[in-house]
Image 1 (tube, one colour):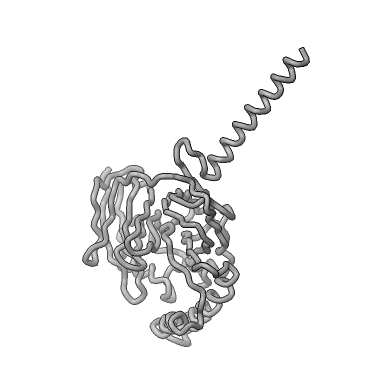
Image 2: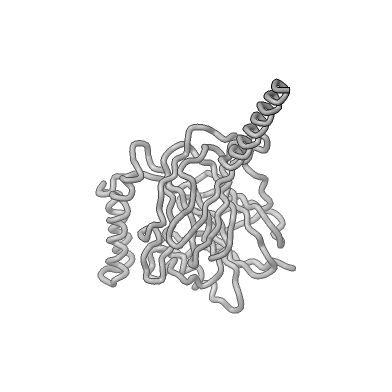
Length: 306
């Protein structure tokens, strides 16, 4: 009886260990059975609730905005040799100083941007990094999914929407380090329902744009290519929505937004592809192709039938 009980006890321990391991693998994105790699990111006012380290490879970021203001997340891949602390000390202060000078009316937007670009070109800001996609803008209470290929390295996770007083969220604490390990999750990219193509200054879409949950693929044509989706109510001024997305304008990306944003894709590297999933209810939507500094983004006005 003692031997039988001992074997049963060992068997139960093994079973419990196996189940717990499977659950842990699923949450950390290393479950090989369905090749999923899901990472939860929750946006708060003003912080990210997110893991410190994730596997490399195709990653599904489930992004939820639990704050009272608009948020997005963008992962910046630091060049080899640079650290999160280097970014915090070497990039944010001088860029924010130029922004404050513009916001307070001491210099114009063009001069402020020239200062920022000049600091990079002249080597005053030495820290190197690249945009690697990220979520579109998401209104409070909404969520979206973004699928990106994450290379191993050190990333900066940030949101540079502005609070009502004009302060960047990242300067309020909405910035953190994210390490992507050399362990590849072997996750696979999703199948897209709609293909977004940037060509000749326009937004083209291939696929059946209908109500429901849709996955979009986005391939960047040039640097800073991105797309954000706003749900339009009533007689909203579409130009106002697009101009609001100019991040370095005094009122650009400043809470509250002139429309309810539901997601999209942040700036990808040229020639790379990312995916995002959103729920489209019947209604009118504005797809905005980015905010490239002095140029208002390209617009695509669509209506989803019931």
